[in-house]
Length: 135
Image 1 (cartoon, rainbow, N blue to C red):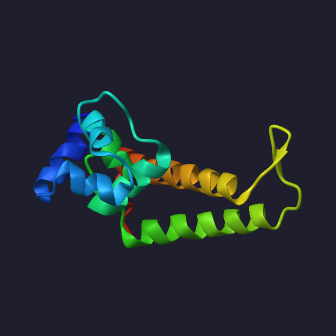
Image 2: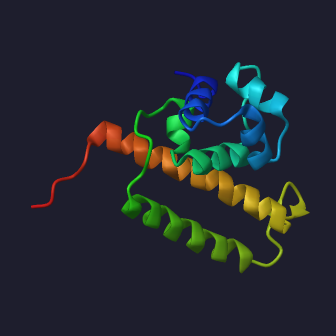
C-alpha cells in the first residue's frame, strides 16, 4: 500500500473529510487529494503531522512497516536523542550550512528530518530483528 492509499484509509477509518484533514494540516483540500491519488508526496514536516494526527508512524505511512506505532520506550529513546542533538546544535555558535548561519527554522527542519529517520530505523530494526527477550 502506498502513502496516498494509507492516508486515505486512515482518513476514512476516522470518518473525516479531506477538507477536515487539510484544515488540520494547514494545506488545501486539493493537496490532500493529490496525496491520496499519488500525484504529490508530503514533505517531512507534513508527513510527521499526518502521522501524529492518525497516531501512526511515518514508516507506516511510507509503507515500510505494517506496524502503526512505536512503543512508549521507543518514543522516549527517540526524544532523548532529539533533545540531546537539539541542545548541541543550539549551543554551537555560528553553525553553518552551505555558507549560511543556521536560523531556528533550519534547526527545526533538521530535527524534524532526524526524527523521521530515527522512527524509520527503529521500526525497520523491529521488523528485521524482532523484539529482544529479557533473560
